[in-house]
Every structure is written in structure tokens, then in C-alpha cells.
Length: 193
Image (tube, rainbow, N blue to C red):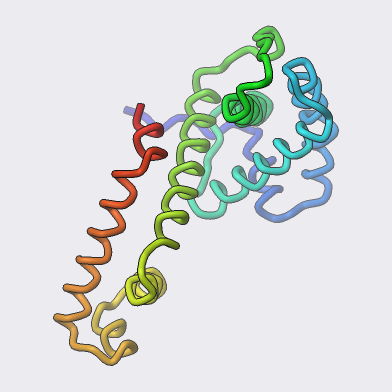
């Protein structure tokens, strides 16, 4: 199977990553008005829309920086779908609001939909991981943080002043505990539906 061709709109991803004022202004001028209109049409305000846009911009930036996001669809479709999903999730949390969905605002590109879904899922998984990580004991947090930064377990053991065997065993136990906490959470069950 051939690798999908990177879309010319990758320039927006590159610009966001470089924190280019021109690219950011272009995104706000070209793509944000449609998001604001959509959210205002679906029980939201301009303030809500600006919050959603800001969160999605950070989400896209993180995908670009940490996951090497390569856009294979128009940025417009990808950005709009992420904003739309983010807003619909906000509405789900607050069941007081009614949702009127106007699907005519965007032609749904399968690639954009896939990118948007993956980005949102990874963002939600990261939030869940961070939340559960904070619930670990201090010794586990310290050990795991060190293993995130230092790849060599020998070096981790030396920094902690423990034997290599103990560091490996403790890492395994801490990772197991974190995994169990994540998998038993209601958020994990919701992500896997």
C-alpha cells in the first residue's frame, strides 16, 4: 500500500509549529469564522467558539510537534471537524443544551475525518494518562518521569541510588499499576466504545 500524499495545506501545520504570525492570522481569517458560525448555530456563543478554536489549535500543534502530523486532506476540513467534535463533546457534558446539527457547512473528506478522530482520541488519551499518572505514589512518579527522560535503565538506577534489577522491577510494578488505574477508569471505558 502506498503512503498517502501530503496535502499542500501542510503549510498550515508547518506554520503553526514555527509559531508563524502570518499562518496563525491566515487560519483565524480563513477558517475560524465558519467554526464560530457553526458553534453559534448549535447552542454556543462566540466566547465558546474562541475557547474551542484555542483548544484545537493547541491540539494540532501538539500533534505536529510530538506525532509529526502529516496532513493528507485540506486543513479546512481537518480543522473544522476537530472543532465540531470538540464542541459536540462539550455539549454532551452539559446536557442542558440542545444540539442542532447543520451538516451542510463542510463537505466531509474521509481523510479529514480520520485525522480529526485520531487527533481527538490521542488528546483524550493523553489527558487520561496525565490524570491517572498524578494519582500514582511519589516514588512511582519519580521513577517513571526519569525513565521518560533517560532511556537507559542503568542510568536511572544510578540516579536513584538503587540496583539495576530493583529499578527494572519497580518500573514494571509502577507501569502495571498505572495501566490498571487507566483501564479501570470510566473515561477509558468511554474512549473504547
